[in-house]
Amino acid sequence: MPNPHWKSLFYKGQSMYPTFRFSDLLQIAPYNGKRIRCGDVVIFNSPKNGEKIAHRVVSLDVERIKTAGDNNNKTDEWFLKASNILGRVVYVKRKNRIRKVYGGRRGLVYLTFIKAKRIVKRGIFCLLRPSYRWLSRIGIFKQMLPYRRKMRFLIFNRPGGKEVQIVIKNQMVAKKILGSEKNYVRRPFRLFVNDLLSDETKLKSIH
Image 1 (cartoon, rainbow, N blue to C red):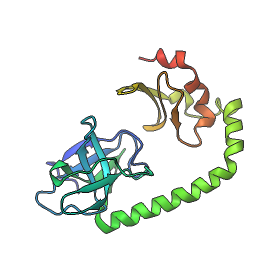
Image 2: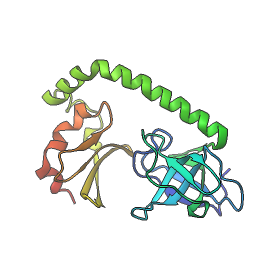
Image 3: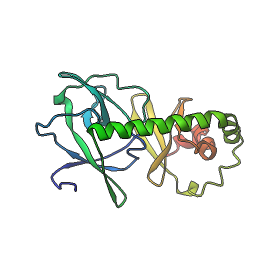
């Protein structure tokens, strides 16, 4: 069970989905001289902006550690050293449920499973993509989302500008940098929030 002396960190972002979800509480244990293993989920400060990141170790040697998010197709652009690692994630709390986060070989097996599952889902989506895009454009489902009135909008300052995130039941379903045409929407939520992302005036009015 979690140790009260371990550090905790609220997770935000999408790079570790579905292992972690927005607002999950991560329990972080120090290594205290123990060996860092391939497959561990570790916490470190981003070499780019200093923000704390939770990613999985995907390869390592004596001097270099390579990490990647479970939801990312590419590994992180940097190499880390053991001294850069702040600790490993051993438990995650979501609402009232506490789940163990496995590392090492079990962590790699889990990673292989979710990546295989993602490939299958991507293949199915490719077949349905034309219909999905057409339905999201005409917006006939936007009032049918039962949680639409429960949407929350969060704003974060990013290097590229202000980022607006749409959250439903503590799960981020969409995000957009204001002034940019690019956005991210989890399937199938584009059917319901496409009109909100295209309304820059409304997004800019959020405080």
